Length: 215
Length: 347
Image 1 (cartoon, rainbow over the protein chains, first blue to last red):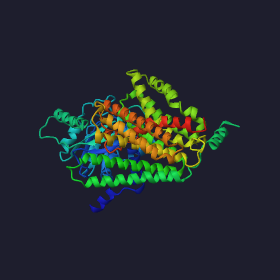
Image 2 (cartoon, helix red, strand yellow):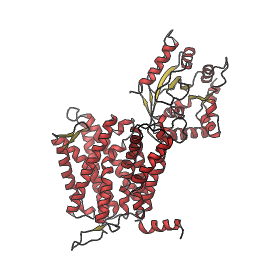
Image 3 (cartoon, rainbow over the protein chains, first blue to last red):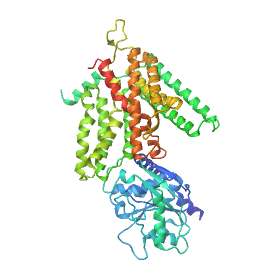
Image 4 (cartoon, rainbow over the protein chains, first blue to last red):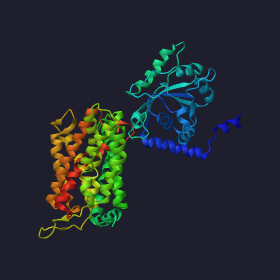
């Protein structure tokens, strides 16, 4: 058991360097600062759920975490986007992304099951419950994945994250970034209440993200 | 001779290659760092005072400002050490960061994205490249952004096909480029002036050999920053009549007059570091102080309109470069042109 643990923790040094370079570059380019509003950085198992505005979202949240937490955190990303071309594949593999196929969803291979299986008892996730990026500044409704995740693993801390200004750095359909200053805010965790209806929970979770906008 | 050789020829013959360290410039640096040390000590002493005598927020503001000045002066000193190109690169980075803050605060639309990319990665470097190419490109770098930028930005936005609030968006981007990049690029351009002085026995003009353009650049930054501090101090001491309470509640007529007067006095005291005589230095300091005030008021108005107090608080953890350089931005082109027309042999 002990040996297995050490094996799991081992990250090859070139990968560590790539991760460090990637996260530094992302933070410099987007001027991103992390603000922990009602929450503290921790290595406990968490699900960071955020508004989705740009391709850089997952990378920026992941980069805002400290190195120890980064090593345990896997952004959930779309397989069809991140497996296209060697550059994207390289980036997604170096930040340890969990790629989910949006097109082929099978009965026993639902994305939520895949996520739960992948994180085991130690890793955390970064998810975007809106599904796809929204074009206007309004946040879309949350898809139900977050609810099932919370239902199947009630022990996970669900941390709302609000990403500010990143949709202006790299909006949808653009490939050249504009180096504006952005901000990542982490709010206080939410949990699924006992027998809370799905829609109520999703609305509450969405509200937790939206509230961070005003902080 | 092909075009490239032509450029190289100009760059060699017309620019001032090395910033020779000379006594007045070094003494001026000594004065600046002496003032900074005094300010730092005062800041530390204020920190030890009980909270009833001085408000802790005032102390925090003061200390963060002193730190910003240390950074500014240290980077200017370091840039001087590495020469003219390093100084231009330093101001390029200051401009770039200021523009970043300005555009972050300005509401833009998706249709502006490509135009924004151009101003950050093409127009801004181009302006500094033209300055770097030397005084032979003065004609181009003094109109590149006001004329060609003015034509380019709306055209690029129009290509994106979004017409909502079109003129407003183009004007905002253009304003950011003018304030953060164009005006500031005149600060390193000071280094290329062939200065003349009237400090001769018979009052006729002669080439100025006692100091260096680097000293003049430092003089300019020092006067602009001191003007800001003096106005703040006089406002705190005697301030009664607020100029525009809606825009900036801490700027008073008493502060303006006292600040401008004492900055002028400092200008007289520092005449030895410049090619100016006493009264010429006084006039220059007066102009810098008044324009610095105009710059601060303008930037305050923009910030109020967007509902923020400082560019620094815009995104937590960022320094607020624009808050520190607003007075320099407005005074730089005017100081440059006054010096160029009255105290240089290049016209």
